[in-house]
Image 1: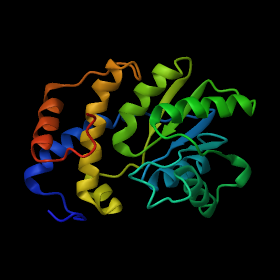
Image 2: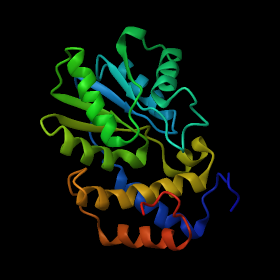
Image 3: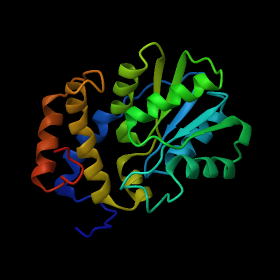
Length: 221
């Protein structure tokens, strides 16, 4: 498979779909106090945050994220900064957007967003976390650990797997990120970074099969 392939090989489809389905929490959305867009390589996070804002799900958006090795080329000024610019292009007013430009991991996203909202005097009882689709479960588990008093809803662009792969334009990248996020569900709970989540046997098997196929670049050592 070429580095930038956009079509999922059929021999990997069942395992990739299993991980994809596992990470999507399928939360029913309701109005919350703020939408928090978690920085990543996926500009669709900002697109969906803008859409939910315009639909009235929250009165403010907070974009959080600096850079990571997977995003610095695409978003050289930082994830949150580029997300803000995209949301403005989509019609979100500037005074409805907050930017937290220093977070370098999901724990930082949550902690620094919480600190910024407190500094702005914005009371928060319920939040909507907007992320790439396969980050939902980890984002939820991290938020429940680090900000346990808030109610959390998770949201992502509602794209089927193949459409999402086309939108990103790099199948290998998505699979390696999926594999990495799956490993982090267990490892981060063990390290005290997130609440524990059940990992069904079929998810474990799919993870192991994709690791065996070489999708290991995002694994923790």
